[in-house]
Length: 473
Ligand SMILES: NC(=O)C1=CN([C@@H]2O[C@H](COP(=O)(O)OP(=O)(O)OC[C@H]3O[C@@H](n4cnc5c(N)ncnc54)[C@H](OP(=O)(O)O)[C@@H]3O)[C@@H](O)[C@H]2O)C=CC1
Ligand SMILES: O=C(CO)[C@H](O)[C@H](O)COP(=O)(O)O
Image 1 (cartoon, rainbow, N blue to C red):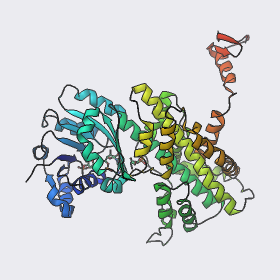
Image 2 (cartoon, rainbow, N blue to C red; image 1 turned 135 degrees about the vertical axis):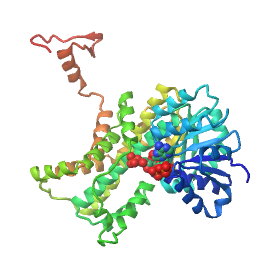
Image 3 (cartoon, helix red, strand yellow; image 1 turned 90 degrees about the horizontal axis):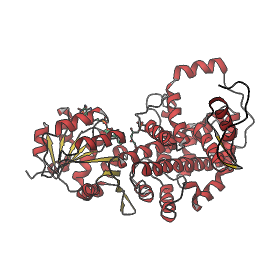
Image 4 (cartoon, rainbow, N blue to C red; image 1 turned 45 degrees about the vertical axis):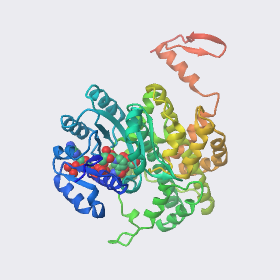
């Protein structure tokens, strides 16, 4: 049998589908999975692609099945399993072979792996992949970090398997070492914010307007032809339409209201905090998932405090129209924050992250894919050095057009005790960002009072202290 041109290790949801995608694009692929039964199942399910797949029971067989120099994609659980897999592969590989970690790695682990592999003769790539099961099979968005020369070597296969937006491949080299995994982390942070805001809007329709799941589905379906047109809005409409076969009720009404999280959203928040760049919508979304998991505490708190009395509400369609615009406004905040974090990281790690390209490769294939990202790509192409997406002409206009709706929805929700933490964070973010005279003068005074930290004055240069007198901390 001819040797494979590429290998995939890990035949879980993502690896199996990525391998089939590679084979579907005419490449011969060798595959290996720690648990051999999974490899066997994969081989049996390859169907008409089977003659382009070499299923291997051992790593030795796997490496021998690939033509050198070998590109090897590792698609296993992130963290220690990746290190274990690299350690097991290293003695078997030869100079110039490329190890590509395509899982959701923490970019700091990726940078460490680059350092660990320095001088080994092997090339390393840290690659973010988004699109879930379907994307992996038919075209994901691919965010590559590593040496540009290494990207050039694998560019043909990665562009072939990637999603296409109007014919343009959603795969790109974004910068050295951890750049690809950092961008994937921010992608996921934005994904968290996007999902949280959609859930908040769903909550207003369910708990304030008293709508049932099919009626809410119809609203999301209608929105999917407007400015909110996106994969997440589409799947929201889809899941809200589905009935549970056991109870015959909408399945969303049967699903427990506690969301899991694997870490990427939290990493996005941690990194934004480390760089001093506010990502309040992502923070709110991560915190909301954590609060969602505290089911017993929430139940007790409702027994203790009850829910606030409902206020008289506006006519349903008025609220729904405002919800659409509020969601759009919230999205602008989340994306503006995510891109601002990437801008700061680009400077800190000297990556030169290309913002327009990043937006372009997110237009198809990935979980946050949307029409909106095409507008972001255009905005960054037209104004590449803009400090914040909100300041581009196109997005300033969206903010002006949606501002009133966001305020009304957040105010009504607060008055009615409906949690909208991500949407509320968006209002406060805009209100803080656009107000020249803030309130940190008082904080500076407090810091100087208790810690003699000093402050700046409007009317004089240098550091100053206040004439506080009395007892200080
Ligand atoms: N699912 C998704 O939507 C997406 C997932 N990702 C990322 O892709 C990666 C794979 O995810 P996914 O396919 O969903 O995961 P699955 O849970 O479906 O599969 C996990 C894979 O990792 C392997 N594995 C686990 N531990 C080890 C270990 N110690 N040594 C070797 N192999 C190990 C498993 O092998 P075994 O069969 O032997 O247990 C299996 O092949 C993760 O980093 C994930 O975060 C990225 C984008 C989207
Ligand atoms: O990377 C992904 C999508 O882009 C994965 O689906 C990831 O698992 C999502 O994160 P979480 O499980 O924390 O919701």
